[in-house]
Image (cartoon, rainbow, N blue to C red):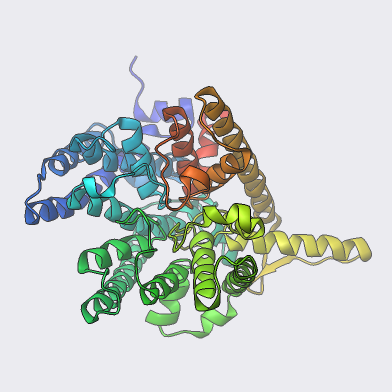
Amino acid sequence: MIPTAGRLRRVVGVDVGAALNLVGALLKYFSLAFLFPIALALGHSETPWPFVAAGAITAGVGLGLERFTQGKEHVGVREGFLVVSLTWLFAAGAVALPYVFSGESQLNHPVDALFEAMSGMTTSGGSILVDYAAVDRSMMIWRQFSQWVGGMGIVVLALAVLPRLRVGGRQLMEHETPGPEIDPLTTSIRDTARRLWILYVSLTVLLVLVLAIFGWTGIDERMRFYEAVSYAFSTLPTGGFGTDPRSVEPFAAASQWVIALFMAIGGINFMLLYAAFVRRRPSRLFRDDELRLYVALLALGSTAVAVLIWDAGLQEGEAAIRHAVFQTVSIMTTTGFATTDYSLWLPVAPAAAMVLVALMFAGASAGSTSGSVKVARHLVIGRILRRELDQTVHPEYVAPIRINRFPIDDRMVNAVIAFVLLYIGIFVVGAVLLLLDAHRVSLDLSPFEALAASASALGNVGPAFGFAGPMGSFAPFSDVSKVIMIALMWIGRLEIIPVAVLLTRSYWRA
């Protein structure tokens, strides 16, 4: 007897058909993103067929999944984990298709194409490109655009979807527990997404205009309109892809300062930005515990790096301050841009390099486009430690953990601890696997570089150290190592839990 959808759900414990039905609908809409590079390719007299074919395949897969399955209106928490995980995996595969069809030798290998695509959709910024000039302009813009689309997707995911699955850092900052059901087609989520899109697009347009004005007025002669659009597409989503192999280094100091500012803005919770600047409630900014710690860590990290590189004679004066601030903001927001090759700091100023690696584990605000652990979780861990110390001195002392004056329950506290332990464990396993594979293929990769590469991939930071540094490329890694890092980027971007849940036996039980 052929099992019905209801029987399938009772057998496996999750309505796979409903989940695939929703994934298909999302892919169908995602296929519209290919219209942008098609128009650009035609405008630049470049071939649009890689994008046409990729868009057609993506739409076909989406429509096929939607046609042969049903039930997306009834997707609940259990199916939500599968929807979130598969959507990002399928979307990265869709982004990779134009690379495969392009015929460009740097991108058309399937593993390389998927690495570049996953790096874009997860706003990581690590790249396998070496010769940037060899890639068509439309393909480069598609690469940049994938980060912009992925960044907005992550914001909606973090603010509207993950809290309903009872995972995600921003849930810690809310005093009301989200409801138990997830329905991505409800009015509330559509309305939230619409407002976030307006803010996101507005900030992007503002950055494009500022950078373009620098180019038009001669403040930054390297900043043409093409570069202004390209770097705006990867700055707001804290992505890190660029159109120059030297990242942001060739541009004027004014452009670097502005990009640093917008990276820092991209690292702030977008609902907080919306409340402060759209709904005109700026006081919300000053009352947010996470934002205060985020700014403090940026200031502390920038000061430490500036002092260390100035003392080592690497930079001095305004340049030392600019490079320190830029690299601190870039790493902590997991953007990955660079104004200088900080890999070269390691022999001269190892402490400065270690500060940058430590910042890879910080992340910015929950509800932002950044990756890594997130400041909200560090805030909870810090208050747990303070409470434990207080209780050591005063055993009778009892106090809840509070964030923004509201107590968070023990379940959330345990979730934070579990996340951090999983994060550290996956990071270590990733580094060991990269080191073992490098030994297998006789690749010169030091333990420190393996640790940095694992931290960079899992935290969606982008560049690491050594040949995979900010002015380098991940191309020397073997296909096996690239697949490992693809998995790390995917897991890290979805904040581990949605993917980890799929690997448990209880998830699939009725």
